[in-house]
Amino acid sequence: MDFLVAKDDLHRCRFAEAPARELEPGQALLSVDAFGLSANNITYATFGEAMSYWSFFPAEEGWGRIPVWGFAEVLDSRHDSLRGGARVYGYLPPSTTLTVAPVRVEAHGFVDGSAHRAPLPQAYNAYALVEADPSYDPRHEDEQMLLRPLFFTSYLLDDFLDDSGLLSADLLVISSASSKTASALAFLLARRGRGEVIGLSSPRGAEFARGLEVYDLLVAYEEISSLPDGRAVFIDIAGDADVRNSVHAHYGERLLHSAVVGATHHDKMGALPASLPGPRPVLFFAPDRVAKRARDWGREGLEQRIAESWHPYVQWTGDWLQVEHGRGAEAVERAYLDLLDGRIDPAKGHVLTLAA
Image 1 (spheres, helix red, strand yellow):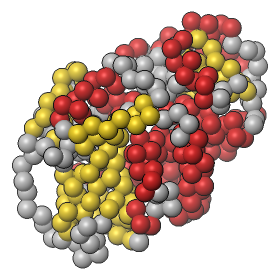
Image 2 (cartoon, rainbow, N blue to C red; image 1 turned 180 degrees about the vertical axis):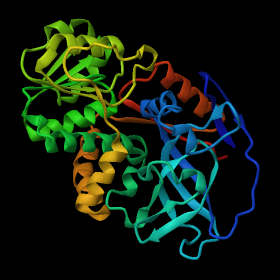
Image 3 (cartoon, rainbow, N blue to C red; image 1 turned 90 degrees about the vertical axis):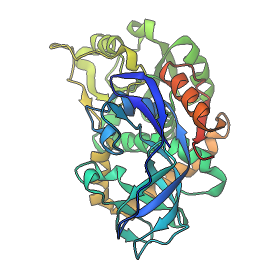
Image 4 (spheres, one colour; image 1 turned 135 degrees about the vertical axis):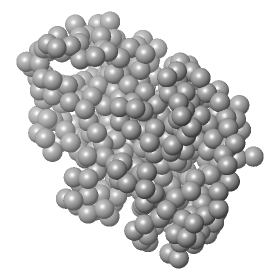
């Protein structure tokens, strides 16, 4: 079974039976066990065409399968180096199964070498065997499905800001402060203790974000003009055109960098104006950063550094994260539409399965 979303109207969704196909030599069949669903997945859908997210898991014309992160089991394998029964973590469709063509099979995992995925960012094509994953802890599978992709982005952002010398700024302004990507970045920045970490939020979100105790200051979107003076960096996770324009207008040339990261306010996006005070916003594309650090540190070095930051972060989320589990088509559709329309408590996360 596949969960399908109309590319031209994200509110239209349905389920379809996936046709059974016999495995070819070198392929493997993954049984999707469970996956997390969050605002991150809505970003994948919003940028589905522009950033090729629809291309990872093709569907019938006009429809797409939104990528999710989760765990799967190798149900059947016709690859000599990948055994059946192995448990993997990685990029999956909201489906019951996925056929992959493993290449570069090593102790830590493999890459899906399916032809249609070859032109796509390789960071999304890698699958980790949990028995060799330094970040894996069986007690925290829910957190890994829900938060690790978001934390990964936040870790790479934190690393980029440090590597680029941008942490010399007086102020680090993050939109969508109550989102999990924003709070993970604030957690990492707070541990560094460099620059004032400021969150932008709605009043409802600010109450939650304040309780996380990782922001030095919370400012409502309507009060951006009251932001402190100083040299600032803007990390835009909301993707709200009015918020972006207001931050740029407030700081102008005192804005050292403007990073476009997400679209939690996907219904308020707008084209960049021809003229915008301060620096031109730059898309932060996590796979590019992964490729750089894999060259610098090696794959194992990168994974080890992420694991060292991930474990204390997971312990911190135990103070506030509430996981809701759902099974079956109705639960998946309900959670997806709630996320799409912003009806999700920021403290909650959905772990879902389509398996019977």
